[in-house]
Image (cartoon, rainbow, N blue to C red; front, side):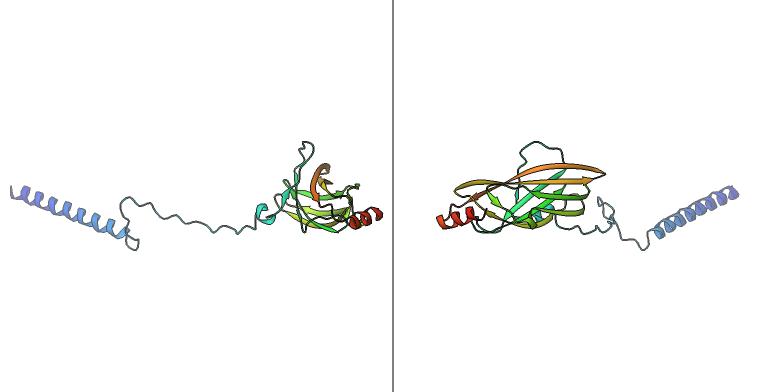
Length: 192
C-alpha cells in the first residue's frame, strides 16, 4: 500500500510538473507580441500604393465634351475650351483635348474648312504620338469666326492609329459667335 500510495503521489507530482511545464512553454510563445484584446482583428500590413497622376476629369476641368454627330465605336473622345469670347473677325484660341480610351500609336486631328471660320494652315492639322488610354493630350488652335449672330460649328476629325488599324471619328464643336460690329464682319468676309 505504501508503494501504491507512493506511486500515486509520484504520478500526481509528475502530472502536475508536466502541466506546469506546458503552461510555462505556452506563455513563452507569446513573449514579445502585444497582447490581443478580445474581438480585435490582427493588424494587416498594406503595401504602399503608387501615386497616380490626375484623372482625365482633373486634366480637363472646365472643358466641354465635343459632340459626335454619328454613333461611333472609335475609342476616342474630344473635349474643348474657348479661351475668350468669340467675336466675328477676332482670332479665337480653342484648347482641344484628345482622350483615347485605348492605347494608340498616334492620333491625327484635322480641322475642316468651313464658311464659318478661317483656320490658318498651321492649325488645320496636328498629330499626337504614342498615346496612353484615359490621358488627356492637349493642343491649342486659333480660328477666326467669319459669321456671327448665332451658333457656328467647327468640324473636327480625329484619326486614331492603333494596332495597324486606322479609325476616324468626327466631332462637332458648337460655338456661339457675337455678331459684332459691321466693320468686323465686313473685314472678316474680305479676308476670305
